[in-house]
Image (cartoon, rainbow, N blue to C red; front, side, top):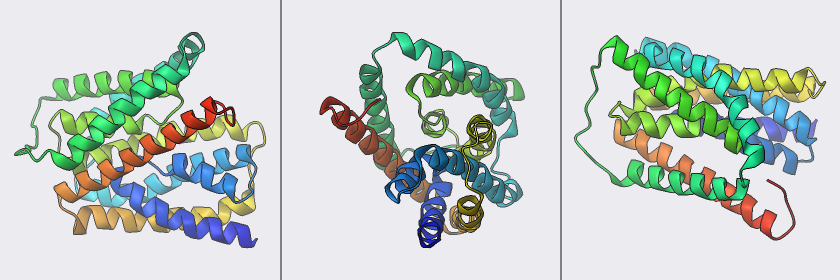
Length: 257
């Protein structure tokens, strides 16, 4: 039980930070839970469901602030869902380490642009057809590459939306809405195999919900768009570092891709 309480506290902190970026905390929580001695499959199932729990809790504040671009989010969900398994299938025929290095390069570039670039950003006012086109294009990219590389599509969605000229807060909030569905789909895959600990889930869900509420409050009420970009950039750097570590462990023969 002590381990689960520690996991709940860590979940609160990480979820609060990553809710600001809109990418979900599962990619960090899984290795943290595993390091605490929790079975890897259980850690994956719980962390994925916590992504959905956190983003659901964050949505009321994001929606009230009119930050979720549903006309962009819905086509992302519709198109990314079937392309994710396609990417996973193609990954069997492509050297994954090469793809991961390319993805790391993308993350470092995107993170650097987030932190250092200070253009006179504009809130785009595209037509509904353009919004659906943007969502479809981003969904195709996030779904296929996410499945291909085995990483969360949110890591692609946020920087691409910001690059397209959208307000970073709207990009983050919109991505958080998408994460609800993509993470829940992943959770169901693990849950059907019995990979779940209800005690762990109960405690960490409280931490996740509280962290998401705090993170959403910080993003909407306390941080300006440049500060949100900074948080997103730091998160992307963190993902890149984690993936580099994984690759180095693989090359050293102490891990797998």
